[in-house]
Every structure is written in C-alpha cells, then in structure tokens.
Length: 77
Image (tube, rainbow, N blue to C red; front, side, top):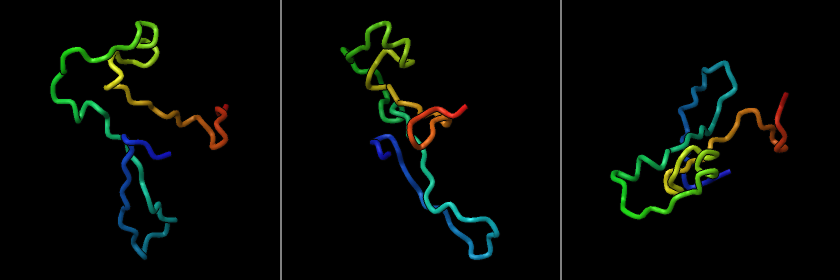
C-alpha cells in the first residue's frame, strides 16, 4: 500500500481512551505541493487518458483510492 505520495503518522494514544486506538493514520501528499512552477516540455497524456485521469501531465497525477473497494479488490454494494 505504500507509494511515494503516501505518508503516515502515529497519533498519541491515551491510556484513558475508551475507544480502540488507531495506531497509524495515512494521508496523501498531492504532487502539486512539490512542483512550484510548470517546467517547459513536460510529458503529456493523450486526450482520452487525460480525461480519465483528471490531469494532462503525468507529473501531476495522483491516484485516488476508492473507499468502496474491499480488501479483496472488489467493490462493495
């Protein structure tokens, strides 16, 4: 599950918390946080692929995992 855009952090777990703790939380850092200006001659997706991925440039593509996907890789409901 680990990709270059995924980060993790470990929140504080209180001994008095009545809920079961979540030891590790994950979040995504979008690639546009690291590209401060658009360089010349960036590679581009084809028009059809750009419409599917939501961006024209592969450097700015960030996959968005669906919460509907089960652990086995099949969609729920």
